[in-house]
Amino acid sequence: MINIGNEYLNYTSKTIDKYMRFIFEKNYNKNIINKYTDAYMEYRYGSYVPSATKAAVNKKVLEELRKVTESLDDYKDQEYLKMVELFYRYIFDLDSLYVLEKQSKAIGEIGRLRERLLGMESETFVSDFTTMVRDDIAKKKGFVDSLKSDSFSLKYKKINNDKNFVKVELVNDIKFPNLYSDLAINQAAEKDTIKEDLTIVKVALTGAKALEDLINYSYDTVYCVGLPKSIIDKKGKLSRLTSLIDNEYIADKIRLLINFDTFDRFRTYIFELMKQGFVFDIFLDDKFNYSSENIEYLVTFEKIFMLKDKYYYKDMTNNDKIKGRIEIVDGVV
Image (cartoon, rainbow, N blue to C red; front, side):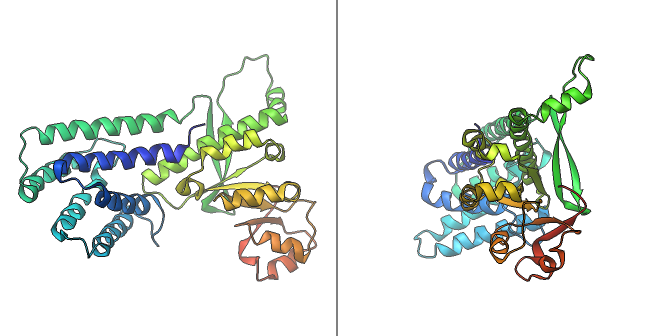
């Protein structure tokens, strides 16, 4: 299956490289350019700033680009590095899903800098570069739009009134004939095989939403997606599911929610997935028993959902190892 994050971000990285080849032509240095592109991608799409506003992210990216230049202090042509860093300042405007006036301005500035700094004049540079950028924007937007579904959509429920931490539910937008009752449709959806397939759809749409958030400089929202126990036991389906979001930026925005019974049965495999970078939350169902061994397991989860009426409530909420991870809920998450 398609990897949502890798597909978009790899294409974006390639377009940046293409732009630099077009700008520098014979002066293009792949080894140098790659270092700046890697820095841009990591800090533009990763939420590695205290306040993840667009201005803060762009400021952080510029700081990291400067660090790349400083780290290459033994490179013989320091002026070349300064030029590369300067051109990368315009990538923010070119890396978009929409054709905007500021892109035309950025391309014009690049053309003027290219003449002044590189001594390269071309009557068609601006028009050719504009066509190139707009074609790439159309392809990226087409890819993002292709991830949406006419049959399903998502709805979000805040967990404990936290607007940045939401539980994702799949909404069926298919128009069924009147002869099928809502009850019959819901009962069919509860069957294991159908529930597993719907979960894959839900993860795919959630991954697409997380990607859109990153593109739009929105880093705060984390999406919690429940996994049925049966899908953990079907490695083929689970592999399809995880391959959709197996990207460091996308996986960081999605929490895969399981109950304790599922974890207790498949803990070895769950730990393997954690090592691969997938983040899990857990709901403590009736299978959970309070013990030092189980507490050690819970430390590996980012959030622990539990009911307040359980006998272990005080012990859990006073335990220094996990109390910061606990979310008290009034029912099954």
